[in-house]
Image 1 (cartoon, chains in turn cyan, red):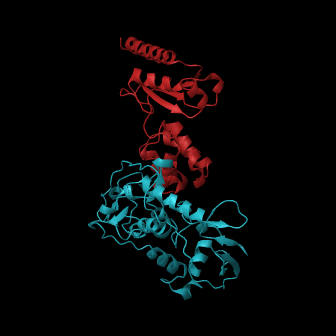
Image 2 (tube, chains in turn cyan, orange):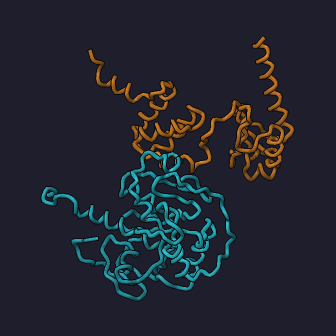
Image 3 (cartoon, each protein chain N blue to C red):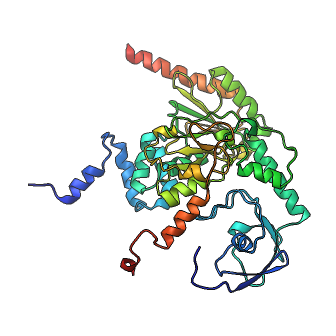
Length: 248
Length: 181
């Protein structure tokens, strides 16, 4: 994101002195410094959700773990992004995500290009300790261009936020609660029947797993492109597609 | 002469089905000033008026509040109190709060559901009885509590409740027969 001001808030992340912008999140400051914090629901260009909890960090003098994506920097804040307990927390979260749905990489369109798969590898998930839930969920292939497989959905709400904030259609939302939470299109209709869908495909581009995919992709063929949304929203903020003289 | 603009607008805004119950919902919408954050209140009103939340009603609320339908259904489906299926003639709600559970509410639910052949949370095939469970109705001293058509029945055994429901349905049958002739 282009900014007029220079970063002027000093924070310490993993011992590195970082200058952050006043309204910046810890996650974004760490990204600029090249410090990798695992994340799943965070998506540049959309609002903060803070649901996956993979980006939790330790902040000095605060007793609880803070999500880096939703924590704004404060002057002289001391942040630790790695520790034994943080690694363990993240690993468990990843295992819970894997146990909650039906994540079978071997038959997944996103095999090899999946953010959940990459995370599991990064966090060293070699087996899953919680019991697999094996939920019964049916695939929605009613849309002419895309498919939605709720078995692979991790409820990160990237598609919900992208559709509502970038495309402005708000086709997707979450329904139900707790383990019964699921993604719905319009009034819980089949996606192909949802009248507000514009077929833009941005939700498919941002999906971290193979839950939303192009139709006709075979195993391991799907490639998502979440950076598309960051590009679109920054171009919009900077008025790249309009006459900037007229805006003034 | 053309009708005054306000009348025309009222006509346009009225629900095309002509169902007068929508007028009650309109009244609540106006009282809420069409504020989007009043959604839960309005869902309550809609359920009171219609008995359940049909797709039609949800779409109407979404349109009136300028909210996406997925958000309206998402919010409604989050709460246990909202129901999307029309309930039966009689609603029997068994409290499954801690006190009632300890006092045997589970047996009440199981035996009632066996007696009338209806799973908990659903309505009988003839549409006469709906069996629901509730978290806690707040009358733990009367455990196990059953709320039948809005009336609180205290310290229920399965036999008590089944007898009560049978009696009521039989009385209704008798009245219907008498009317028929």
